[in-house]
Image (cartoon, rainbow, N blue to C red; front, side):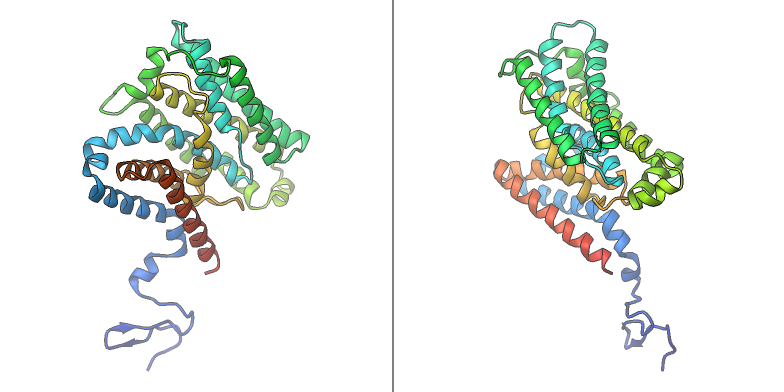
Length: 338
């Protein structure tokens, strides 16, 4: 005999709680919808890593962890900026264009510049300017984020073509290459800088009024406006930060490649959005965080390494990435309905 609200046991088996209709098994209580939204990406990453060990242990061996982290830095930086925007119900389609233009500027225009600070500041300034243009267009002019950032992306791609003459040229200064190919305490400087960015943003989102304002803007823009939140200011700052992250990621990618490449940012745009979604941040706004985004960036990096080792190439990677993204979307939709 059982009382209301008490799980029914028979022979050691645990049945559903009659008051809630849910199993009270300890594992069931642990693996909640919140768990699947925020931690599932790490479970999938671990599974992908184990598959990699079976396919080619050398690719994901502990001795290669430093290389995998270095390879993940450009995508992680772009996805970090996208996370801030998606939490606030925005998105940025121009990040790939920023990466491409940074690559061309660093390798072509400033290849002979002896002072690396000039190269870095110009590239970062360009990213900030693009973010400001996007933010003003969306927040003050009223252009939709999709149209505004898509148009900016076209302009950035055109600028890269004009500057480069249609063909990549020039070598990156050694100081820029050292960002991605150098080593400090066993890891590339790019890895440490990316980690610092993620930690800083995580602190801001969780413990400051800036983070609370951003989440409020994403949850209910109308209510946020009535409570005194300047939606325009939030959007402009978010886009400026996204432009900065894209420029930083572009510098890291340029340092790894070592020479100009017009198509440097083509794959990063879609992958950055995919990393955000797989990490648990959804386009409805007001939910998510940077921890899952980091997991998403690492997942796609490890997945690329494993599939390349398996000989599947770019086509196999695209298919696998699509499957992962759709599976994540289906899972998160299911958790919202439970």
